[in-house]
Length: 136
Image (cartoon, rainbow, N blue to C red):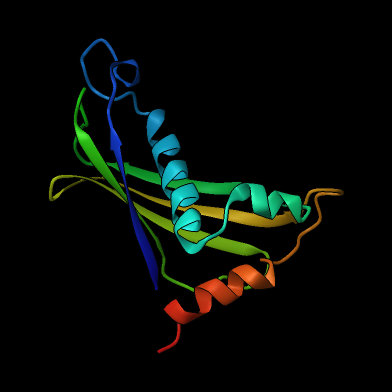
């Protein structure tokens, strides 16, 4: 299992008139978490796209447990529970304020060739970086 954490400070523009984070921003928080998780492995989306590969969201589920508010420091925990197989990769996300879980997500992405949008697989060099986290 691979897991990483990313802190994000809530700025005013992310909140609504009630002072809470607008629900639509949580998908962005989870995207930032996925991007930074890959970066912690030494991989960027830019690297992946340079190989002619894109990763597109095909399914997202999220659950709102508690609100985040202006100036809160949220921690986005991003986890790969299963080693990616075939054209699919599933990221599990949790957002915390201090030790309180406030949001969860499951995001499924398909790995596609940028040209033609045909299903592909995760590049070998990324699999090599992930493999040590899944050896049991």
